[in-house]
Length: 385
Image (tube, rainbow, N blue to C red; front, side, top):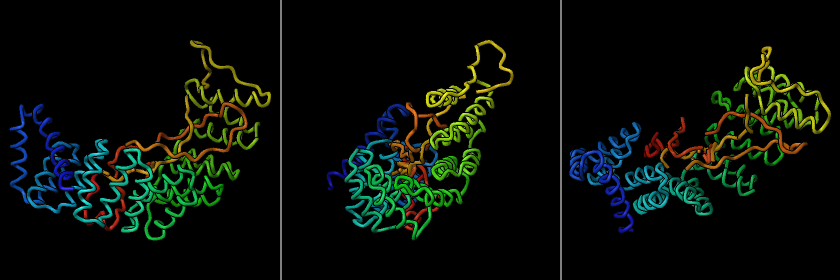
């Protein structure tokens, strides 16, 4: 593994040198930068790298981490930082090499195992990701991002019971709103919407969140608690969007009259033509004859009627570890809490807030921190903004 570790350092040195050739006119400039870092202690250089990364200066962060390694900083900590930096840039193979080097130094390091799991996931190796994430949680069961990603993978592989067990084990010892939300998604997949409502409400107890509220509305629709569902949609979306969403809920539930009323109100509450609500009305018309309002004629007065556009509601994906999350995030593929099968084809269109993932899967490249880091995360500080 010595060769692997040297390869990681060399790769970063080359990347930094190339940046220096552009910005400073040659690698001599890069050498000077590294020389400045070398005058710092290992801990100081590591902190300087963290500060640079928080400011978005990835090249400077890499220089400082290499300087920290040279100055005698903890080997595992530095390689976790380098792995996080590689993962944040989408370099899965380079990240894997760095995390493995960290594990050579500290075989039981939970954060290195968590990062390795995300690197495997980014590289398309889901089974290896499951193994690494499971080991990370065995060593520290309070890692929310490892929990969220592992549970999300289980959900996507058609194992919602296994995902639920992962989430419940974490929530027995800690709390994270993304994990609570993703637990709700597993319950929805298992056909247990009443319990899912409780999970989404618990997630929302941490603060207002459009994705959590939208998921709560979907779960309430499954229970035919439409007034509460509308309130959930309306708490995070414009009135027209909430009306369109609840119209789809009525349509899915077979209440065509109230569905028509909701779609017409959605159209009437917008200053522009609401194509998706009109499309939903058209689909409803195919199921049963209804009186459809006429689309506006370009250039003709609209008498204050209104209409915008919409998209399918999406469940939150677990977010990745800071530099190491689908959900609600490598942009991690979106995990969805599907609506009941539509009565008409094509499916009605529902509006939802744009996603992020949860633990994103994780919605986004690594770079988001939990407000409640685990003890290992606090001690190592390897997850950066």
